[in-house]
Length: 92
Image (cartoon, rainbow, N blue to C red; front, side, top):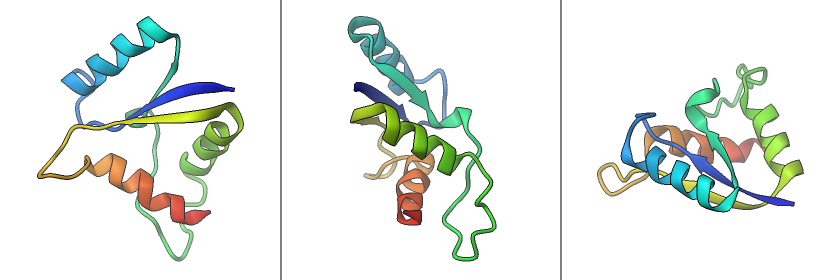
């Protein structure tokens, strides 16, 4: 099993992504940029069941034993895309 950095930032050219890319180069860990996937907020009616989220989570669960989350801090909290990612974990 491997390690993966899951990046959730609004900017693909920002400091968080740059730091994650540097870590990947030095460690050979994998990187998942949440901006590369289409998923939306948690939906109690499951209208978004066909978006990228469940496929992404299946891949993460099957391939990785260590998850490193990287997000800029916005107003003392994680980025919006990272928050949606964590909220969707309740799908499971």
